[in-house]
Image (tube, rainbow, N blue to C red):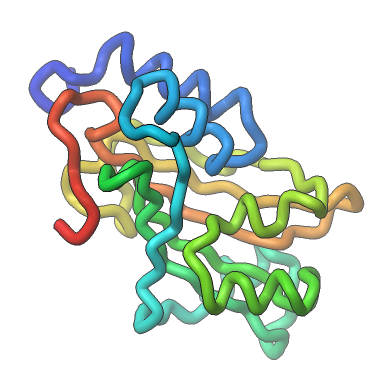
Length: 177
């Protein structure tokens, strides 16, 4: 049992919603609405603009880029209302996005999946684990590692997502906590 019994059917249902969507943003929006976490069920990406995490050789390999190609990084809290649903580490390839998309990612709280939706990406789940992985904070109930790929197979992003217990528990984690 995970986290004092709050795993079970709610976590399984949450995993099903995530698996049914190529966009974690879309999945979180559906989950937020179904669970009535906030109204309206708007997902925001509160970015830590000071966070830095250079792309390791493994990340560059997953993205299919050379050691010299620029890789962007965005660390965000994905929220619905004031409830933090996940923490995400996102390494992305700016040259595979439009200039407008890059500007939006650098200056706004719009989630990555929403910014790049017009590219028609598909999500390739690379790993899933109940509980945290190294990049995730305590209290993570589910961790995902995924690549977002264009139709031609090129990766635009590698993301590590750390889903909070607020997704399956009555007590919420609020932004800024």
